[in-house]
Length: 130
Image (cartoon, rainbow, N blue to C red; front, side):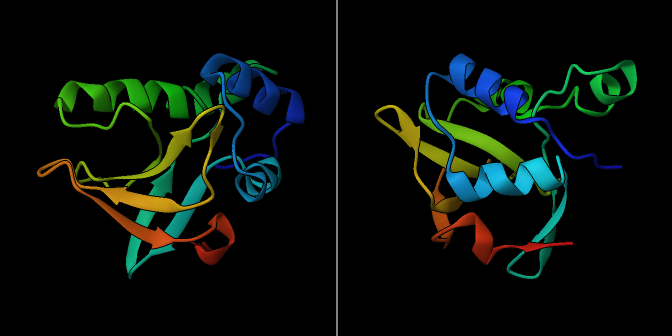
């Protein structure tokens, strides 16, 4: 179940990350914080942005982008500048890459087996939200 998201939670996560998120990604998350997206014929589960507004939203967003990114770091080959925004259930992740003080618009698949990155979209709007 997805909910809309108050922009203050985006500002909080950007402060924690010390980087701005891409505008189209933020706009999508405000409308629907999480959910499924289709990439190259596969369905990916989006990680939400942590929402502390009430107990139900806390429970529904506990697998937020920062927590999931930290768990990916255990693989050892996860890029230092990557932010996990969705997973395919098999270990691979959709990621944004940080450059300086912002994340780029491009979306990549990170392979947990090889550590390779494969660009799949120039912008979040190119992905199909289900």
